[in-house]
Length: 370
View 1 (tube, helix red, strand yellow):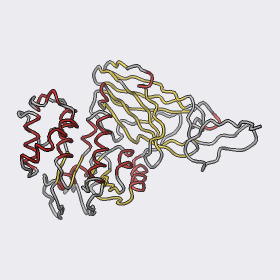
View 2 (view 1 turned 90 degrees about the vertical axis):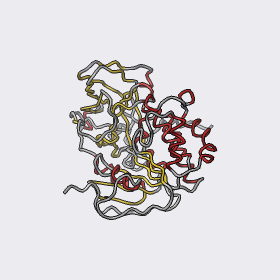
View 3 (view 1 turned 90 degrees about the horizontal axis):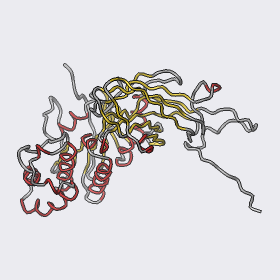
């Protein structure tokens, strides 16, 4: 027998925001479905005190033939709210979802982003004691994701409500959650302070890498179901003395192989560097160049060059990102592999860059005060 979840046990306090992280297939969605009373556990039990609002999949809980307005009232009724309570919150929900012109349009005609905006607005504003949010927020654009994170923080701190949040974004998890649970193969691999749990997750997720070698990332954990995805990456610096490993304030060249299943337009192709705790440090994104990339079906290779990498020696995690128009995620690999920034000999006789002087370097001038 295959167990989707086995021996997973943890407590969540009133008003706490807890993160649920893990690779695809680790059991995150199964856990949330059990907590939402959608799936009955084969053994064991989940005990929840209070009304639960869940946002698990695009369109969940909506009737496709009903309008946005009608679905708001229907969802409120499912949560056990009176019509007067829903009406009191109605304007806030519509304003947050930003679907005003389409409020009386059948939900089946909404884009996935519009459905998510409305679903989150309903779940967050109709005052459940427990709010459960899956990775479905990734469908929304960057601005809406920021609004959602702010709202989840508000309902926890200001409203005293409990939030369970699943995400592949370690940055979002760390900003929102004091504690987290790491699931691996259906079991709780770690439960505790978010910073520690995220570090454990990243250490388990990485594949080894070497400067100058092509690294196959086609099987890396990712999200996004667009027509373009990264399948291989190569990186190196310009210094043979370091074996091609990047070094502080030196250049970093990243070659990216993208496989397009069909013709598509890429608005954003990015390479991101995180520390081992998941904090985003560098984001080299083609969107800053003000141009889009038109891909035909087939394989494409792009070179991204960072002229000066302002990172001190240490181990970092490289992530990859491809987005289409309106920040729609085509491919997102949060932790493709580790790379090491190494120190290099200086020609001024003062030795190497200190290894423990923080993560980021900076330009410095020493001026004579006299």
